[in-house]
Length: 307
Image 1 (cartoon, rainbow, N blue to C red):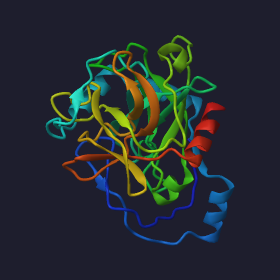
Image 2: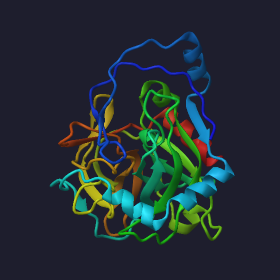
Image 3: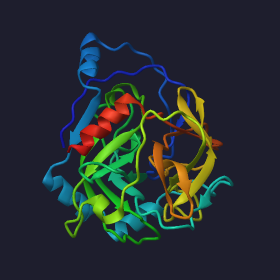
């Protein structure tokens, strides 16, 4: 895996990151330390707003071999974040084939997961999730590894198999400063040689969309009784808050990176991705935050769909 970036942090609103679940590492408060970016860092950021890391063919084969059904079952039992909240409901409608669990080994060496979504892209191979599912914020050297995406995961079933991640892209500001928590992944073809969205379909994605309207947020949180084994949903009206968008929602760790779908049709299970689960207002959450997908997110996505 290749990745190298200088480090810098800046002052951020105090929120609780909806971290991928790893053992007892449940959540962390977003850093509030303030340091100035160097001239070289600012120049690098201006030259390229996207940070990219790639996984070798050997690493990708190893990732697929690593995430056995037994290991997936074990990671789901490794943590319980308490009861599923009253705002969060099990999705029992049309199967969401494009939404799934993203399994990986985090920068601390622990098995864990996030939520991710296959989106419409030129290469038919792009998955959207949260940047903190790819790397630690404001810590360029601390990246996750052994990443596979399992679309339509449900109670141990993997109807479309697992797709190894070959490239992971985040805004450079997330790697350096912890801001703009969104990521685009490029995955290999599946076990039968089919590209991801040829197999599961593709969720449209919108950039520069005004905040507002009803949004359905989906994820695989580590709350009981589901413990990451079923897809859950929150519904709320999106509002601007602290430079991001917010909906009332009490999903917790494991739901990170899950899609915010506007114009969602419950009968078809389809909508347009306008953000991803990023952060909570507290450890007993009432609000979920997601980034506003702007110019940098669009540049990142466009680079991913060319990969």
